[in-house]
Length: 156
Image (cartoon, rainbow, N blue to C red):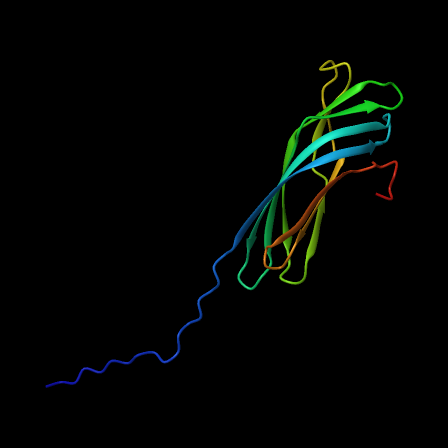
């Protein structure tokens, strides 16, 4: 009779941690003055919906998909009194490290419609600065949006 020898492994392979997906959506008010070069300052009021989706990498860090969509948003020209309309949505992807909380800051592109309406084609602009704080494990700790004061005001 022959002996059948079975060898069982003594060490088990460590399983990679599963990818974690986190999502957070906020609706934020917008209120401020945007002043771009060659155009009148515009007092903007409205809202923006920001959705952040994070996906972690094994060992920490990962990528964040940030979707920004303007709600009803208008502006009043401070020189002409004309009413401007702002519309659009934008998406961007940013990486974040496995370390401490990381700020992700960007300016989504939207469209500006000149008064009195659709006579002049819309103009792509970046009047809003969106900020997201993401921890190394993908936890979304804060989402903010402010009117960028424009290139005439480089301190912002």
